[in-house]
Image (cartoon, rainbow, N blue to C red; front, side, top):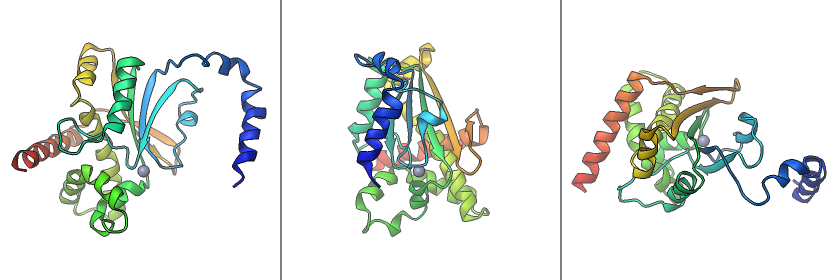
Length: 219
Ligand SMILES: [Zn+2]
């Protein structure tokens, strides 16, 4: 892959042609949305939202995880970007977007097999391990592929609750100045479904949160 050729092509066929658009964002950015999704290369956020440069603030990591506040594992990289987006940039929306055939969620299903080979990845995805346990228990009759899809969706919903553990997020959501949205991108159809309140999912998230709290109290 010749990246230098791509850079030249960008300058000539994108930047120069749309110079006015880029001139407007030279001095500052004013994004309306913080988009948290998986590092997966198949998710092109600007294309999905048909957005221009300057519209979307990004956080990407394996399996689109937001660490919960006040849990022992500290991951300030993710939280600092959320803090900046909410407190400084004043975004109107935070989207957490899961997707089909997520390698991070698939690894979560068998995390014990990856601990030696991928120690950092294993440590990271273990943050969602209770979600995996919950899916395996509740949907034991489903196939592995169906369980994976449940995990991808439930993991996305859980992250919305994880966002609410931060006071600066909760305050703005309660004041109606910040919206939290869950998306699920099905790569095989191009459909991005928006999460709407689902009682079953909501009950599962509550169950997982209770288990998490119990776990950290006993440690
Ligand atoms: Zn993924």
